[in-house]
Image (cartoon, rainbow, N blue to C red; front, side):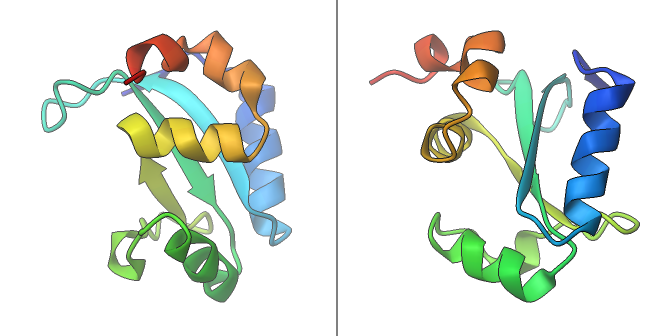
Length: 105
C-alpha cells in the first residue's frame, strides 16, 4: 500500500516515465515481505534499454524491473534508495521522508 504522495506527483512521474526520462517517485509503503522498509522509490523509464543501462550503475539487474502497465520501474529500498536520490540531487525527497537519518552509517 502506498501513501504520502498526491495525485499530481503520481501524474508527473507517469508523464516523465512515458516520455523516456529516468523518473523517481518516493512514497511511504507497507509490505509484509519487507518489514524493515517504510519507503520505496520507484525509478522508472519507458525506454527499457535506458532503464537497464541506468540500473547497472547501482548493481540493479534487469530481471528486477517491475513491468507494471506502461510504467516499467525498479523498486529501490534502503541504502540504494538513499544513494540514488542523493546522486539525482533529490534532497527534498530525502528530507521529506527522513531517509538520511534512517540509513546513515
